[in-house]
Length: 189
Ligand SMILES: [Cu+2]
Image 1 (cartoon, protein in one colour):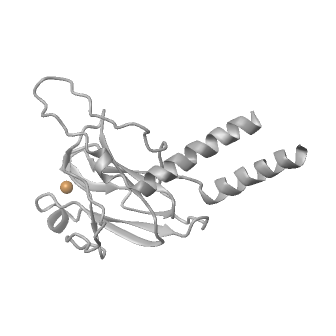
Image 2 (cartoon, protein in one colour; image 1 turned 180 degrees about the vertical axis):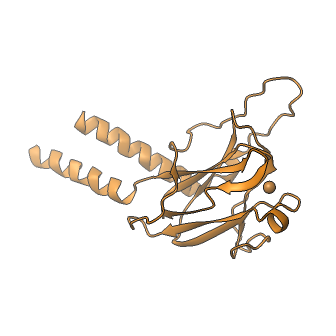
Image 3 (cartoon, rainbow, N blue to C red; image 1 turned 45 degrees about the vertical axis):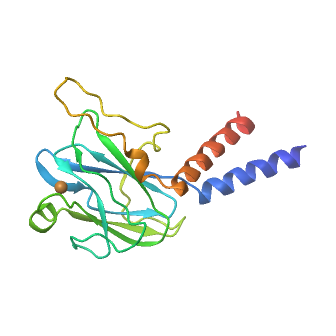
């Protein structure tokens, strides 16, 4: 019985080590400035990045090289709709990091990329690799869709499209994280 219990604990520790499920936060727009904040940080494969659209009209589109204002040719290139920023209740989009290597992205609204240099990088390192320049930690991805709160009747309805950018992989990582937490609670508390 004790051996079984210890092996389960060891398994949980092992899974947490390799599926550590960090979620990083990137703010899109900032008080009239056309920026991604932070513009450059390290993360690990398996982590997620949540973009919070806090100001202005912007989107996030994957590029193939740094400072390029052209969508990646990858068939599954990441991109979001254009959101109108709302600092109090930002729309969000989640990018799951599935492969090591730098990820480049930009905003393709108007001239934000070529004129305002609205582009950025995520340095994706192998799972478990030490991060020299970690980003800003966020809460885990929301389990349910977040619909922006409307404070008056004049705001145009924002489509609930967060789910459109979610991939099956992201969902399975979220499920894995949830399962790990339940297992931990069951055996350790
Ligand atoms: Cu923009």
